[in-house]
Amino acid sequence: MTSTHRIRMKNRPGRQLVANDFVEETIDLPALGNGEVLCKTRYFSLDPYLVGMMRSWEGPDPGWQQGLICGRMVAEVIESRDPDFTAGDWVQGECHWQALEAHKASTLSKLPTDSDIPPSAYLGVLGSSGLTAWLGIEKILQLKAGQTISISSAAGVVGGIAGQLAKHRGARVIGIAGGPEKCASVVSDLGFDTCVDHTSDNFHQQLAEATPKGVDAHFENVGAKILDPILERMRDCGKIALCGLIAHYLDEDPITLKNFRMLLTKGLRLQGFRLFDHFEETEAAHGEILSALRAGTLSLRETITQGLSQAPAAYVAMLSGGGIGKHLIAIND
Ligand SMILES: NC(=O)c1ccc[n+]([C@@H]2O[C@H](COP(=O)([O-])OP(=O)(O)OC[C@H]3O[C@@H](n4cnc5c(N)ncnc54)[C@H](OP(=O)(O)O)[C@@H]3O)[C@@H](O)[C@H]2O)c1
Image (tube, rainbow, N blue to C red; front, side, top):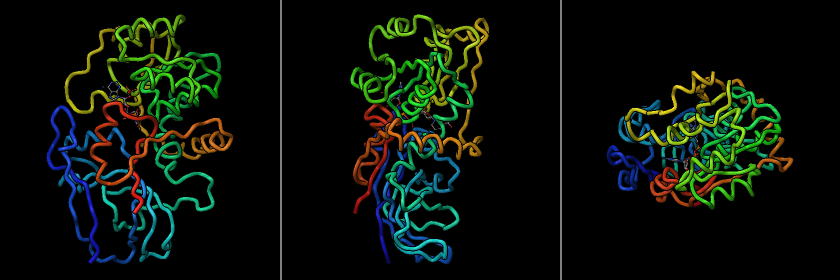
């Protein structure tokens, strides 16, 4: 019998997620059934949305009810009992946080084999993050040349791609990120026009100086601490794409906006959007992103941590602002 290592939740987290909320265990794998494919997980994705399920032990995968984490992966096929897959294929799908796993073939899709794109990109820029960024810019904000846009968590994968797509459309792009190093990299590596540090004492003043004529569009990834001061900077009839609320995922506290009334007085449109309502846009989004990657006008930024055992610490670090771009665990052995 083959065994493997798995990380699961040991207990529900409190108001802070800590590495001690997870445990590593060794499990035996059942014999491979017909229509199943045994895969070696090569990369899995450390996505912010997982923390809601870590907190509640509830999610679309039934394993969540036992604290089993289930997220996005790319993997290599080791053995197949399905005619559509053979050993050596690279696939994407969902996995538990474990090194080896048997998957139903119907839940997997093959990655292109002749691609000049690294497999990890299918979890980030060519995965849900890239599609989310594209949807916000193209469909929700319908950004136009000459407009000014602000983007929170600009050094993150969604924010970073959104900003680069906004530059491609001829917009002036203002990033918001945590710390001077992240802000510098958002400008020098991603080409944003400027980036404001939300951890600085005079954040609101810096934001006002960076947006002297206000902003036409805002892409929100974080929550009230950024959205509230941004409402003051919005121009009349501006649009806000509410993509994420990462600062609020670990609690049920009310989300308070001092400037809420400005939605009315400025005639603003705030629209939340969910990736899974827009999968029909995948081809258009990936077409643009792939072209930009190949033309070298879109940068692929990843924070890759090696080794399954490091996943809890890397996940906690991602939520606390460590690293840039897409956060992944790589398993090499
Ligand atoms: N709507 C959808 O369908 C959809 C799909 C995918 C993702 N999302 C959302 O999009 C957002 C971005 O996702 P991502 O994968 O690119 O993650 P990400 O932006 O890389 O998330 C990690 C970053 O969030 C920032 N952050 C975390 N807690 C914060 C806090 N309390 N205050 C301020 N900043 C905080 C930190 O950046 P700084 O160090 O710069 O503060 C941290 O590095 C998330 O909210 C995610 O849930 C939505």
